[in-house]
Image (cartoon, rainbow over all chains, first blue to last red; front, side, top):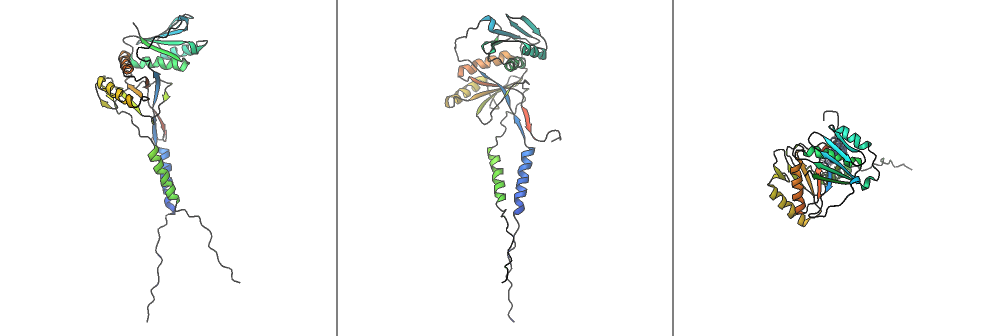
Length: 139
Length: 142
């Protein structure tokens, strides 16, 4: 008797669900990924030995930053003093400053002013809309 | 006449996995790793900072509250750091210096650093403020 060998089909593993798994992983990582956004205040330093730019006194808003207070001075309103940062920000935002783009915010620091304190003032004047900002140490 | 039985048409989905993995690899390759200097620095928390572009090469100049200077996360003396910045700026003048300084440092000391940066021609500076977190599942303890 002749035995006929039955030809078997090769068994296949279905790869159709692989895409589902891959997309699932992709979506999972996209949703759960945490990213850190770094923020910073951009400044441009003046060139070495550059000439100082003259400003009219009335166009200068001087802000003295010491360790415990902010003192704002201008010919239009005189001198105002604040111990609280929030108060200083509110007052600065309330000020009506015509032709702001021509005005200079001059931040003056003393020997004991902390870096964080100076940045508070710098951020406040930037948010108020001053375009010309200068920082200098008290002589 | 006999009607020939037709198989229902199917869409081949085997290439879908290739597309998915291709996307996965694309995101893995194009994403930027966090290159934050891992130094314990209490950064100032002030509003109004601009988002910094991590894809642009930056130079990291850091100072902790003990006044230790780090250049790209490696402790250096101020002179060494300035020499390295100067050398980098020779080849790529557009580089920005990211200043990570502890908020409790005196501004006088930071100002002295600005003077040195001016000397070496690094005029584009960014004062890094507190890092904010984005994405992820918030409020679920994740």
